[in-house]
Image (cartoon, rainbow, N blue to C red):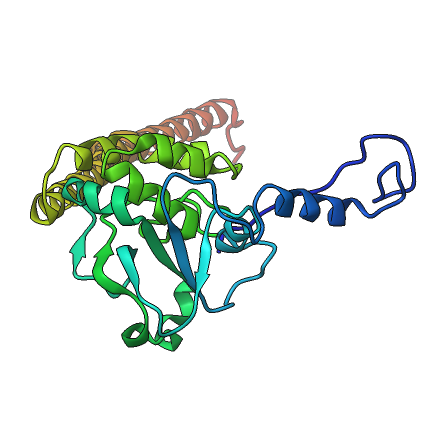
Length: 280
């Protein structure tokens, strides 16, 4: 679900895309990931699991990367999980009261595409402790800046952070380039949720936050309209000034016409004086 941009670089000079021993660097990179975990037992403090429906590109999937690192176990459809299940099918939200459950039995997620949720057999996966996540903003490359669109590692990290295990959250996110950004973007919100107790109090905090956002949006729009008015000036005054200018221009034109008439009359008088008398 996350968009990874891991590119292998040569350590020594040699053929492009290959290490000094001639082997493909991508294969070496995957070998190193398997060496740090792979199918072996995870060294993470608690159990992590996922139901993977192969909706995502394996190279960009945070769940599959965690699996390659040996940090998470893939479950089959039909298997249940004893710990917290972070799922769109949940009713309550993750809350600090879930801490003991997380520490004892771990956490799991549903690895699927947000665009293909209808394909997931939620009735055949999950467990007794299914939870939603409250309002949080994604930092992964696919859905950066979008609320609720967290990928697997962000969902697990959020779960740990809300129950007060920031150490586990940071450790899990340390394997991803956008990990620190996720915690930074949501720092204030996570702190608010950590100060709650049960699911209802987290929901109340989420509601208050969303209302705050709506109010800020309204204020920004109002401020923008006010600035637009000041930029354009007083419309009534502009119309009045325009009328005054038109009157002044009209008076000037009339003055110029009168001046032309006077000049013409003076010229006629001058010509009359110079005109010779007729001889009878």
